[in-house]
Image (cartoon, rainbow over all chains, first blue to last red; front, side, top):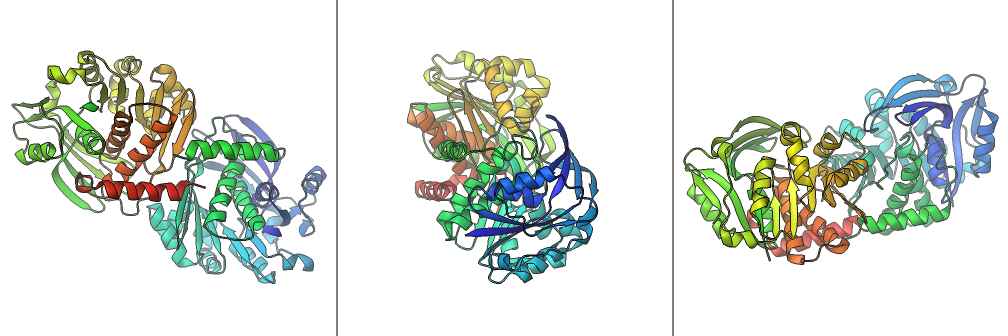
Length: 299
Length: 299
């Protein structure tokens, strides 16, 4: 089993209380890939410019990410610059340069269209929809978005939500989409819009999973030294979807496991800038932390 | 085994999106008693005015709360009026009438001074200190406070923290006392000030327990219809300390259980105004919800 992810591949410049890094490899599809590739083979659908450093291509290839459908286009790679202050829960966007992303029309190699597990990471919902329409037999489709699209393409997003199995949102997005404040009410409202499984990410406060048959909640793994939260949500989604892809069955048991693995992958992500920490983690580190997590959350 | 709690007994007027109630029985010691009396015999140390309704005395007595050390003084009972908006996470205080509380000097009947389990619920830290000095053999002392005392009597509070076993704070208080934003760092800093066990309450996001040997975290029990959060933290502390009093031993196992019971008691508290919901809960309801909670947090 493998998974295909559509999203951004970016060069991120990030400032946090821990320091600053310029033009690191980032983007929703890349962070997702770091979380998911731990569990399954990942196929990346994205676009970069000719200025995209070759070392990043080599790095992703070495990590086993299939780049067949990564478009390399004349122009500049999407760049994001942001800063985190105080409790590091919210990013302040300093600048966004879309570059080649502004004309992104995803292409998917024919043999990849048979992949059954799909994640539509944060990009324009019309592009997400287009990717989904190219896939031959979606078995498990996850969808993420962001406030910008909720504000500017709400209708497209809500239409797309009817065609996915899992909708992933952070708490602010869930509230903004539904007009509810209580997160259980948010989850119920999101479920009514479409996706049978709703995952609400609460950053340092953990995650809530809602579906018709059950709810499930976990705190975040407690991390003392948060270096850079960029991509934590995508890494979480990667671990979550990656595990579900490997598990094959989607039920209460596998969802719980998937959420816990997503939580652990995200906890590594925030411990370093960009991919510094997630690029090198071992199976043993992940399993150890999962064991620790179980211990500190089981009563 | 029994427990003695010092705190406020109040008449609360509360407005929330669910409605408004006038002059309900409330206060930190009363909400604590509701959580703790489920597990152990509770002795209340507080002050009320002559205007304090007789029905409240009868109610507390009927609940098995020992009122020997409840002072009934000439003057008005402490009154608090507050409002909750939006996500109900923070109260907006509309008015505070101290009344007899302004000259509160706790008295404890001699036979009650031998009680080994003590909770110093939110009042002036000098009054908390005075109560503690009267007790003959403290075995387990818990301490709560609030931002007002952190701002106005920080030194008294910090001195007192060295003489208690458990310090309970909400996230805002923990940040304000330590100057840290990351809650693990807050917990470590609080532990350094004094109490060997630090409990940080995060409202709808659950709770974090920190001590030298281990940390433990739990999400809140997911409640869809939050009617009135007033006293949730005190009810949590009551369930937590009440369980520890009954358990006798304080170790990782009993602390985890205590936290989960505190969480469940608090979840009932928010489902009704004042004591509406906690006054009538049965052992079966508590155990059922605890079982449900275990199910939705175990992976």
